[in-house]
Amino acid sequence: MQRYVVEHEFNQPLTPKGFEDSSKKAGPCYQQYGVVWLASYLASDGLKMICEFEAESAEHIRDALRSAEVPFARVWPAHKYQR
Image (cartoon, rainbow, N blue to C red):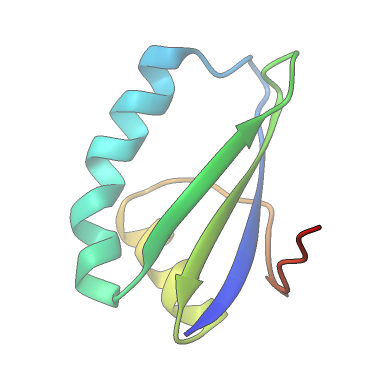
């Protein structure tokens, strides 16, 4: 499976409750499309977030997010580098 990054942009800061609600809604859709969530990183101001996923394709992620009605700005393939 390929690793992907999803960029989210918000008009209002994302709250912990908003993140939890979105995650609950998206979970079944991720499973349906074979998408595995790995991590999320929220900007300090709460207006941007990037999420790391594994999936067969970017389109699988887009389809899962659309099914869950979770807005996103971009999905792009990524490589993980560690020291």
